[in-house]
Length: 102
Image (tube, rainbow, N blue to C red; front, side):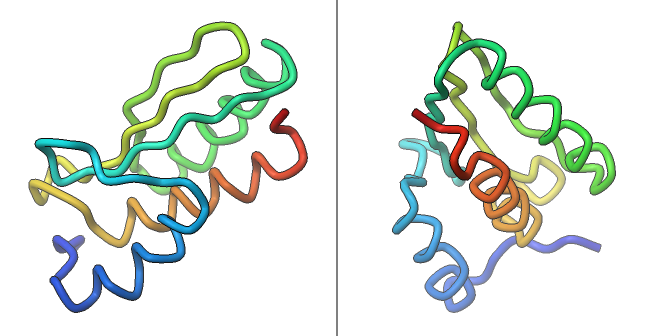
């Protein structure tokens, strides 16, 4: 079962994500990031790739897409805050975005 990240675990798990542009979401135990791609096709293609991983891991992002910009928020609703699944999906999102971002 997934558990909420402990204060100690947060330090090691979240700092690399903060270094790559993720931020805490004000008023929530969640992280968010804005991804900007070259165009709509790249943004939607990336979202499709992420969706496959999210479905495989049964962990789905809160996100919206406007043209080439995708805003993402990650939290684990079942535990009422951040879990290792959020960090795992954030790392996967960053990896898939790679050179696609403008």
